[in-house]
Image 1: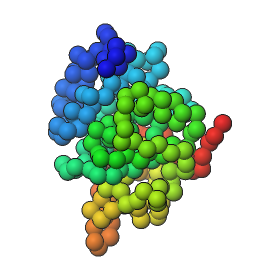
Image 2: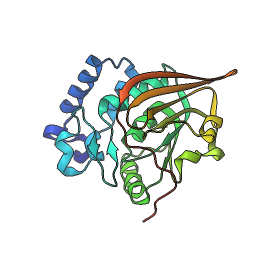
Image 3: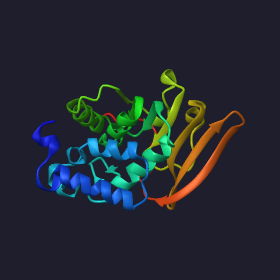
Length: 220
């Protein structure tokens, strides 16, 4: 890993270790998730001017009206998606800056990630290539439609808020798979939908704050 990735000062390995200890005190118990977050340098996913805040427990802007979720939110959603078991194929709706994508790449055999904002995806593609993560497939598309050609998925994660999960995503979830997403508009909660042989069950969890999910694609 080069100096840019390992970081110096506020972006150093020591700073990352402090973030991991904070996540433990906040209740993140999954050691596989914590190891993934130790392995991936968060500071390379934010603008250089914000790099010294990369390991604070805050969401940060990443342009195009999007944000990178706080480390706790990324860890919490990853832990819920894993549910203590290995993940085969995962679908992420909203690649954003690629940080959550990179974490998922440590947790799953294959990661498919969809981003609707073309210029954001171009930047994210370059960043993930730098990290040499070979099990990620990025696509510029409308995430609300999912990715039927790669389904079924063991896990689906949405990084933007929606009031409901569209039927295509429910259909693309494998039996015993789970969807983790922020549910709501003004007031939002973290939600887990699990699919079993009888249908779907939904569990409501913590209060969260995400940008709303948008349909269609933006090329610009």
